[in-house]
Length: 448
Image 1 (cartoon, one colour):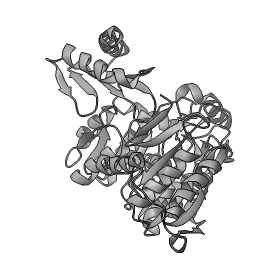
Image 2 (tube, one colour; image 1 turned 135 degrees about the horizontal axis):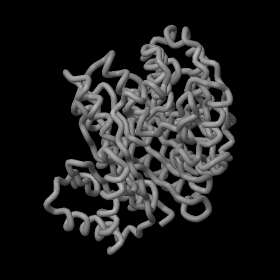
Image 3 (cartoon, rainbow, N blue to C red; image 1 turned 180 degrees about the horizontal axis):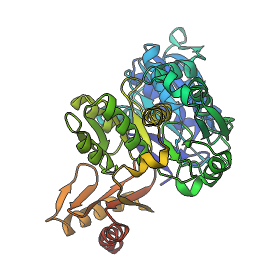
Image 4 (cartoon, one colour; image 1 turned 30 degrees about the vertical axis):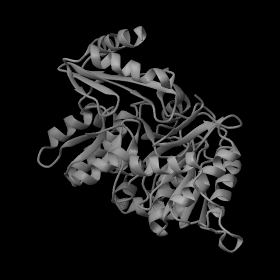
């Protein structure tokens, strides 16, 4: 249960399931997958990072790869560097928002994106079959170092906004980088946008000062700091900086779901076009697209960055993302990016001229409940089967777990790709209706 191998990568508990041997073998498998090509290698700030990094590096070198080490950088920054350096792929040592005792291995394609399901399964199959052979001494790979990731990433993000217009506003921003990999790049971006910055937990030590997932219950210090500093906005990154949660000028946590909605509101105004979001994302995105009209329409995908990106490419979307605070702008990189999210939200505030709380108040509001519970993987199919059977006559989408839509709201039940849990996400117009939808679903689940 503490080793997750899925299309979203590998995560395990260090010293139990995330072992040096596992990391070496994953490096060997990826080296075979890319044919011993050029690979960028990066990590987040976790204390176990050097150990896992060294083991993966060993596997890549034994497969003949030319490895470009980036050091501690964000996930979107590393993805960008795959494109910038013309690499054949990349590996990130990160467990994203999981606690400190976890670490993980995430793969990137030669396009600087999470691998689609078939490609991810090929890498996993290579690992499980051990169908890789170390090269001879003459063919062992070599290592070079590249330290320009943060600057290149920030420059790319600056290219999608009007930096001068934002700078003229002189925004005061409180940034909580949770001692993760996003602090350097995040601060660099805000400085370039002329913001006054109060930076919390800036050093990339990996010793998370609070649970690292950017949820309301974990961000009390950020909310208090925004109020105390009389700041315009508070931003919270997760450890690998691909997600962003937002606090308004009153110190109120407005939530991860609003990150994509706010970014979309800006993009619909200046670059109208289709957007993509997963099945678990709030229908705020649909309401905003309908309000904007014209070519603005919201398309849905299965949960997972690669699935959102696939729909973005199919539908030629101008923006994409997920309700976990992830925003994807194809002009920068096809990966969720907290720096992109910060820049687009600040541009929205600069263009609108009002406070964040007033902008948020005009976005159609729904009540969402997110629950999770441990579930043995052997029971997952039974749980989903029972839900499908019980609600067989309702409008359903079985593309990722099961989502049921009623006129009054929707519920999505699915297994996590990255944790040994199942998730129940529901949304409706009122809290009472949302709770009732969850009660209907949990009654079935609890019986199983």
